[in-house]
Image (cartoon, rainbow over all chains, first blue to last red; front, side):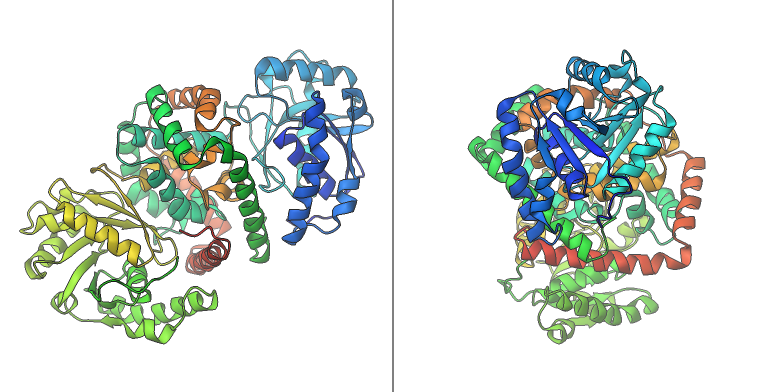
Length: 318
Length: 318
């Protein structure tokens, strides 16, 4: 999480400035780049700077940012798509995740963007080929999927469409490294990419265990929050198992691969059951009333800020 | 992770003192209980106290333990099973995870244990009914599965066999809470319990993505270590998705449940492929030579110690 001065003084356009887009704006401004932020909704635009000031102050308090005023000074909220794209060589698109919405915004960006610009979409699971095919500059579009919130979780999945220029992919990878994110590059498209396929596999099993009455939501959550999730906060699943058998990952696979295969065989895919979702919703709202969701999200972000500071201080950050 | 004085001054027997059993010994000694540790291998017995002293010192340095000498003074390494069980009302069994090995040790414990003792097995995935059926006191046996290492990851899965006394289960749950662990109780047996079923689901998907060439081991690991794993270090998968859609978990399921179901349908269960495991082994050993595995495990435990201290200081510990 060092933030070296960027190699080039490029201008970044942020299109769509909900929580994900706003987080992205902070990522680039923190790294010293000029950021031009646009959202079609005036009320969303009005929230960007107050949110950024508050979040930047929290980062500074945790020792993760230095000059808050300078960072905020690099954020320019603008009223039109054209103003956001003016001079921008990288565009981070974070609009609502529906194919039609993504298709429309990409066509609008495509019509105005500079020829040398690249557009990364924050899509969390829909590959770019599903919504960039009709763009004139479709070779300049790819997926750049962050974790929410991007300024606190550095990983970014880069997923090229079949028609994405290799040079554009390489350029975005370098940009992400320069601004302190951790780019992970997929060789080709797959629905859900890596991150949400891993999350989905775990969630599908968690829903099934809950649905079948093995344990309550809170106990399943505790299994991760006070157990399995601890190692994963600083090392991945492969390194975890590599260290968890005397002879490493091959030894681990020999010991436990059969058990895991049998588990998968005992679990045919099923949709998350509607009754169970409703019951889970009631259980969650009893634990955390709807009116407290926003405060709990702020708690989460505070915890993530502290975790980032801990990882940085302990040499566990990327 | 507060360590209140135990309600009862019970004696704990640790049977099998590899890394898991040794960690358990420290858990109980840290909480103020007398611990009698036995392992059939003299060389394993010889390692227990030096390891415990080093680990306790690391905990004390991180502010997670006070009087190291007093804690170590509660650890009694003994030369026979009988000596370990003498006076013990709780027995934590952590021998090699094979049904035959577990069956043999449980029969041996069964023959010597006090009538009021309870035996918790550290089995990570094999239910107790598979190896306690022939025990005279089989109602006093259950699973108490920790994360490795148990003194740094507080969760414990309690899984009763069909014949486990409800009172024994309740007693172990209370004991685990008393010593500062986080017990999670399963309603009934299932192979892999909760923790390793969740880990297995994620690993199965990770192996498939690697096998199919979407990304390398290091990039898949980074997706967790610098992304998905961060929130899971202090909240579970259900709370994570509850906070990740404006309307909470029901809203999240409506938005993304279909995508996750489609992913599961596209992924029929397959064994971890042998060639791929071999290739992963080579990739891991290139990144971390076999001779450095032990040092890296020490690095992991240091990181987990720091993470526990961070969570405690931030109010994120149980």
